[in-house]
Length: 439
Image 1 (cartoon, helix red, strand yellow):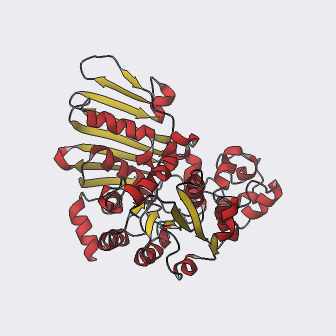
Image 2: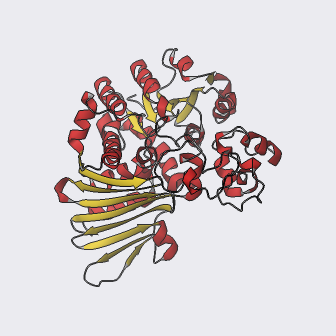
Image 3: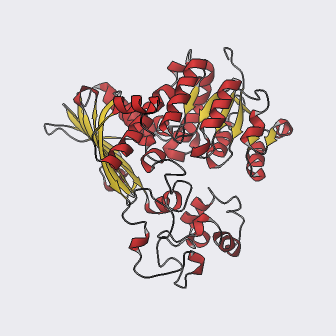
């Protein structure tokens, strides 16, 4: 891919993420084209095909599953792997060996050892693998990174970062949903917060050296129930919405319906009765306090980075949105949802000796698309350059070589939580790769 051309895409696993990326890609059809799509749900592959220009839709090949697509010779320049966490490793490995470059949804793989093996295979084959760490592409985090690299804050000494998952999001995805049980997905701190580990590594440009962590599942469990009730919300006799996590809200509440679209293909056209019928058998119809979930609903990590910089990270179900405080030798930065909502602005900078607070306006996301704070659009926009124009995989903005460290951090944080130990991150990576530790 040394000369400019339309970058062809093949979607493997056409859930919400792959459909988002392919739809955004086709807003610039002079740069992208869709060649193939694979998913067991026919409506999803047909949706991907529908994004192509009308005269090209007939040439988009549809497959029932990843195996069928990958049994064919290479069909496109880039394979978008948007399957579930526990099925990233096999299709990614096969696609790399077939000659595809990859746009890989995070996490890289279900286990850290598999993630590191994919990193090493991509390097061995000289393939380009862009991991979907969309926060790197947001105007918000790019503005913060520019402030850090400008030297305005001086040398960075410490930080506090927070990821407010959101109470409904946590119940939807990490209690009822695909990531509710770490045994069939990945640990919470990996599934949700490898984004955060990656953005910390990217903002400060330093590797993490050691980690300690604490966290528990405190609220979203059977012990919270005060009296017995049916395991399905559709069988409750209380008014809809009296309990804020009532799954019947998927049929009646606009915000809950937004989340329903990600897991129920007929969410927009289904009647209330049809949604109720779906909830009778769907995992998302379960009482949020009577699921098989085991993910912590709050966790804190304490980290030391190269050069002695320290920081804390908090994941909680009981906050909405991310925010961060960064403390340097010259000044401090405060930024995120909390400061945007409570003032004086989304990003503020102040020196340590009483100077005025500088409020920085965050640019609007390009392309008119706000998914992940503009990160979805930014990623798709830069995908072309990363695959076509940058000289080597090492020059990509989000190569798998860089992204792998965020996964080492996240799995090390989980190991620290489970063992109560302070984990040396480099030793942890080595022990996992050689098979001594099972992660």
